[in-house]
Length: 311
Ligand SMILES: NC(=O)C1=CN([C@@H]2O[C@H](COP(=O)(O)OP(=O)(O)OC[C@H]3O[C@@H](n4cnc5c(N)ncnc54)[C@H](OP(=O)(O)O)[C@@H]3O)[C@@H](O)[C@H]2O)C=CC1
Ligand SMILES: CC(C)(CO)C(=O)C(=O)O
Image 1 (cartoon, rainbow, N blue to C red):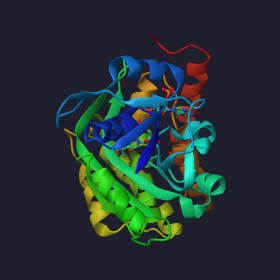
Image 2 (cartoon, protein in one colour):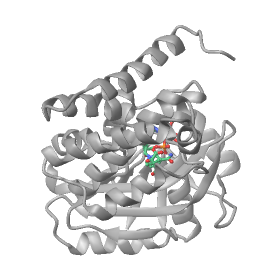
Image 3 (tube, rainbow, N blue to C red):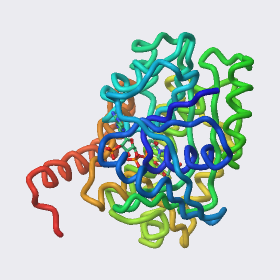
């Protein structure tokens, strides 16, 4: 299987690097700056599962040829339009597209762009970041990838894909309900991203305040109600896992959105918090928490774009 990975940041670099290390036929589609880093240094990973450095083959959008059977998208959601145009010339006939973006809205956009039959669903439970000099750093021991056909079939192609991704060392799950998985991830992520950005603190730091745990739980329960409105009510096991996390005073856990915000970088404000605010209103739920979280990150963007962030 010839695999094209769009992006060599946190997710693409970690899992794509592991695929390259295992000898899979992987090419990274990157922009000029990242390409020269990759040409000079390869992919460099620091992880509790083992550090490694691996030379990789990369191309820019100008060079990509229609030879790839699988395209894995690992861009941020705000880059999706440019990512689609960049990978389009790389697709061999019948190629599958597998996104690992957070959120939900990208699926519809990809279905429009490539046809729903060619688009799979994917979600990553991992904490990973890229340092300014291009090192991929895995921050904890989470590494679960969940993939699935949108229609729930356990097709030969999804089984082949699982076999490929198994080479990353991650736990790879094939879900017959990938849309539900994306919804549950959004319930969890929009709570954690909303709250850790709003408070500029990790979960433990929030929990150690007098009312922090109660606010986390309120936000989470509201998100669970929104998911329920759209047909994906979280089950008790899911709820109890996160309710326990939101009482954990030593949790170092934070969303990648907070890390990006603290770097003064771009964030998926519209695709995660804006999207959840719209869905909250559609579900007829009180929207004050979502409005605060969304407005906070939009105000941050105003300040960032005006160059007024502290150095
Ligand atoms: N990091 C994490 O811990 C987790 C992230 N996620 C989700 O995974 C997705 C990816 O996140 P993450 O890996 O952290 O993001 P990063 O910003 O680390 O990496 C994205 C990479 O995609 C590249 N890219 C974007 N558009 C293009 C394009 N048109 N052509 C070539 N390269 C492109 C960027 O390149 P450039 O540098 O040139 O802009 C960047 O290196 C997001 O939706 C995120 O929410 C999900 C779970 C955990
Ligand atoms: C939910 C979480 C924190 C880990 O997978 C994540 O997706 C993120 O940080 O973007």
